[in-house]
Image (tube, rainbow, N blue to C red):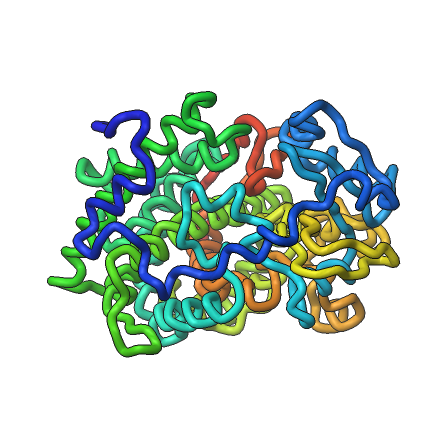
Length: 480
């Protein structure tokens, strides 16, 4: 790959854009709300139990090493609300469905997504919906939502099915590294469905740049002078920006059936088309979110089904009973057992282990009065494994998601796609992708996981296997 200089950053790609060097005002929001609020120090949060850890880094090394162990240990020691210090800031973490409801659904408009996520996300995704608030977020989500309306999503299903069919066929008769193969599949899906391009020599460099940027996203430091990973990430970011902006110009001239083509022809409230910069900032984060989260989710689906041959048989019977004209029809067919299996896999391995916000004014959480400016996180990962909510929580049991079982639980005990106004924009697209994947896989193959008892998982930024996770994919025996 040919990269620009190590100091290349967001400004380099802005200058490359024919739309100018600054993001559109439609994409710009008020980011000064916390300038006057500031960050609460140790004294302001002294009434909340917790610990500081190392100077400057705080608890970060422990949290990065094993996120689930760290969050679980803090919860066990300090209760449902605790504080910790990391990278120069005190943070408050809250565990429980009530905290999910308060923070994610935010009915009183207390919490800022930009204040919570921007230190992590903004260096690499400055225009992401995830770091927008208020009217700015509502307007931009409405615009981008047009590309994910049901009739538009149905147009992407054939592209999904083509890539899934090819991958599943290549797995049969082999022992595969599950995460590597699924990640390769979701990368192909992202390229064809989101960008309308085929994986090949043209995209190899762009996809490598994308990988470098995603690694840098979770680096301990985003300073390119201090971190080689960050330095490679900024180089990759500049390269990928030029690649996407060139692709936008192509899509404006000759649109296809992909998501980028749809976005290129969307209009804002003022009737004006989105600028190249707006389109780039939108698609690059959607691409990242779709690729990583679906790689995580489909890996978990394949693993847990591979450990449960009885559920493989039940889902095959459901597929046969649905009498699908072709596998792609699974995207919208009534397949409740598939949906329950997908939900259960996401419960066990949350694709979003922690969600961050920052308070714009004082609030109360589980009896603790907390000041404005508090960086506040909730943990779907831990709530999804709470034994007070889920009986035998480590067990794979899709029947937890029958309509009766769901009605009996707190409605915010399961939040795999977040919640409130920042709920995943591609939620229905992701579910349809999972349905086509499961149908294609089980219609032609049996799955067996090699040494499932040794499987270990790492939970940041998405859940993925720690080390190799091997599955034997064999041709399914024909029915007699």
